[in-house]
Image 1 (spheres, rainbow, N blue to C red):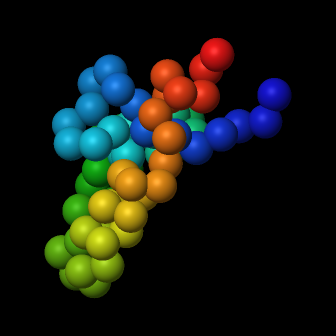
Image 2 (cartoon, rainbow, N blue to C red):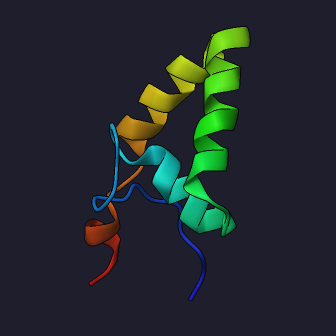
Length: 65
């Protein structure tokens, strides 16, 4: 089964995008949140990318059937 990118429902803080990315890359969710915060603060595009990912990515429960 191929790896899929998704949002998580359990343990999410806002929309679950960072948790889904952490599971996809098999890293700690705190590292993903820190990187995303740096992009949001310094480049501004991180905020826009987060909300686009929140709209586009499916929930984990929608993928697992």
